[in-house]
Image (cartoon, rainbow, N blue to C red; front, side, top):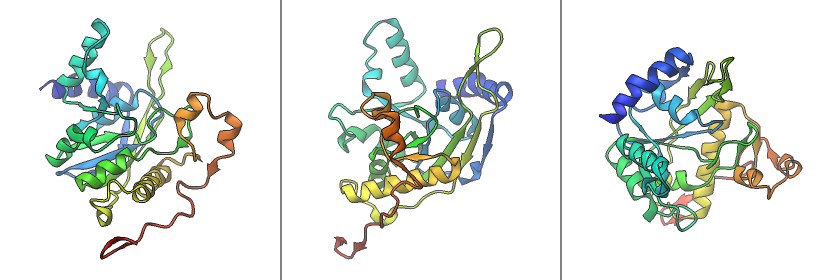
Amino acid sequence: MWYAFFKNVLFRPVVRFGFKARIEGEENIPATGGALLASNHLAAGDTFVLPAMMERTLTFPAKAELFAGKGGLGAKIVAWFLKAIGQVPLDRSGGRVSLAGLGPVLEVLDHGGLVGIYPEGTRSPDGRLYKGHTGGARMALAAGVPVVPVAMFDTQAVRTRIGIPWIRRPRIVVGKPLDFSAYAGLFDDHRVLRWVTDEIMAAIQDLSGQTYVDAYGTSVKGGSLSAAEADARILPRPGSGTQPPAVGAGGLS
């Protein structure tokens, strides 16, 4: 109920008629059944522009600690909002996303829902596309669902003359679903997870046209990788030159 209220009464009118947003390729999103939507991440506006422009309900995993509501009134409001609109916790307390930490996400997919992720794990620090984390590939292979690549454009907010942040003509492009069923169940094999992740990122790059940097965006934001070092890691495509893992009758070969 709350998801429908916030989407249809608040966000969709603003996004569609205020921001003048457009979506292309929505027919590529499966009409029914579980699927994973994997998008580039340019700005905070991505998280509400995309679901506002879609007909189906979209669930985004959020950090598990946000659901605890610890840290004052603001934290309690955030926790209530996430729960009210049906978002699910993602447990990364052990570092990388493990299968155990994906339980709530896999439940959504198993029940035929759509889950949205940002494989880069953070907003792009400079508008380029950065290396994807393998958590999304793990979700897709564990749940046995297709991955739908998505590219966001112009979702950065700008200040209007009266000082209100506003997004002007954002655009969403949805690509054709990617089928990784040949690797179903291999959600703990690093070679498979890296190849699947690179294929997802390559599909996003094909839609967005972004320059690809073979490094995690968090390393640039955190300062462990300088701008010059990031420039040296530019590749024409994610996973350039990597061959798909061969799967034989007895598993990987």
